[in-house]
Image (cartoon, rainbow, N blue to C red; front, side, top):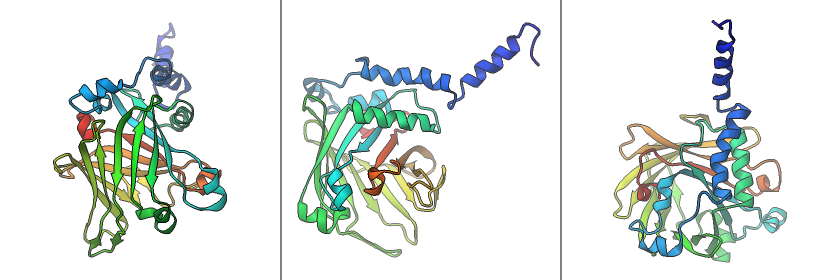
Length: 285
């Protein structure tokens, strides 16, 4: 019940401003993101990365996640031919991201990734594979800062995957290497009997020990329906990140609809990745 001096009304107003969708709340939280743009959040130097026991991956422990935006290729938008993919990466500062993420935040991440990315990546792949089998092509992708220093790289071999309800031939796999070129993490697709509309992936450490499992379901996730996502009908395709034993959901990832423009036509991807709380830098990789 509001008090005569109006303190009750002020308390209610203050509580309202703490809601993740309130403009005042968003304005205050954006200050955390602006620290990176204003120099308060720096990428580590190349020498620091080489001396870091984690091989330059230590910065992952200081943030809550990454927003990865695929750059629009006009030639691909006009012709429909697959070109070399390019990505911009922006960090999500620690303790600043509401859950679930409001649309205003997604727009902010898109703008920051386009204008002030922390890292950039360009795939190195074969033209024949991009044209004939783009979904299964091999590539090597180095993530570099504005000075050209490589933070980490991702490698994928060519795998012509055949998924069936009963078996999975030549599953997809990835290897992440640190700044020194040493394997730091692996990811592979695993077969699940009679999983008709869900793909399962295992995130492993350098020794191939399972750390997390990711479920990409075409029907639904713990966040809701994935039908027709990502599209103008359903903007977010949500994926659940489980612990190694699949006992509970520890994080989420989402592929966000880029909008009704050339980016949407070419299936340009915007990936919002949230790290599991308490995970070490090598586990986040």
